[in-house]
Image 1 (cartoon, helix red, strand yellow):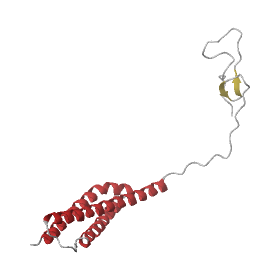
Image 2 (image 1 turned 90 degrees about the vertical axis):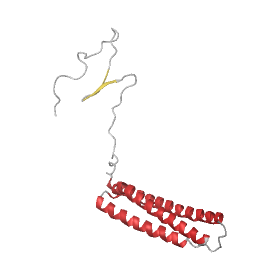
Image 3 (image 1 turned 120 degrees about the vertical axis):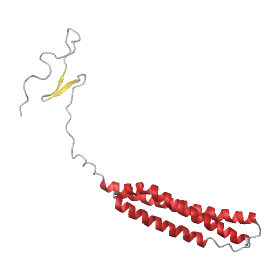
Image 4 (image 1 turned 90 degrees about the horizontal axis):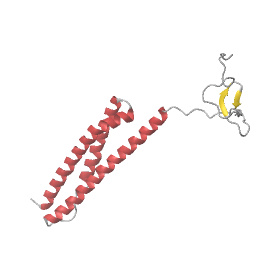
Length: 175
């Protein structure tokens, strides 16, 4: 048999084998990703089988179109070089198809999640007025009557805790 025929046989065997192996791996491992993208198992399985069929058609079509080599092949080293070029191109096509599918499905998933997301709350129409405090005073707490400034006691610092006459009363608030 001619060296060129052996090159074609090896090229077809390797290319078809790689195509089948990659398609099965992508189908098996991509199922989980497709279920996340489409949020429905039945639809994900259907899309997965359609992607596998399309993958086979595109890649095997490319393999058969790229198989022809117009120049004569005189040595095994020349056949190996041509074979490596052809198989390398098949691998590049496989990778490009894979990344295109992942990109397109990821984009679809992002758009679907964006549509399902709750919308942010409406912007406030106005602002609540903030009570003004005179300089040098600080707020003890916000009480119904407004902030109550502390008064410096001549006896020095007061102990922590409730102070008589300061703070909320025990009376329940009125409505």
